[in-house]
Image (tube, rainbow, N blue to C red):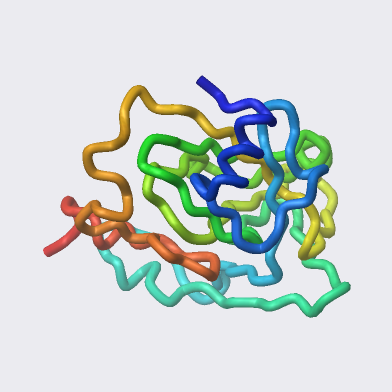
Length: 192
């Protein structure tokens, strides 16, 4: 069951869902809530490295450059480019809700997508949301820190998670603040 606007407001007002960074009334819609784009981005240094190989973590660890955009300036996403961004807000999810991250239609119509596959926030997660931003357009698109960039839909689970993300051994992205690069090397199938 997806939470309605009145239930999203109630969850925030009672502290069941925590949003640090401020929520304006126009951020909450009938069945979702918008989050804003932060000012930090990470880009792969593709001109310096040949491949990203999950069996060889050294091929993707430390291969990104971080850029912080000054207030009032834009970040230009080039056609075909892939960058990591982050939400301004920090989200804390209770152990009986799951959150789906989706792009905003208005940005999608410019060719901007905000997640490749990571459109799911586990119960018990707390942190900013790393956005996997791509430009499908043939033209560059300017993104501005502080603009609404994604929407969240909250879904009630059938029961609280037995092992929510915050209690899961090896939860790789708990309490992240910056856009976090892949920690695939911490997965059981890739550890030595």
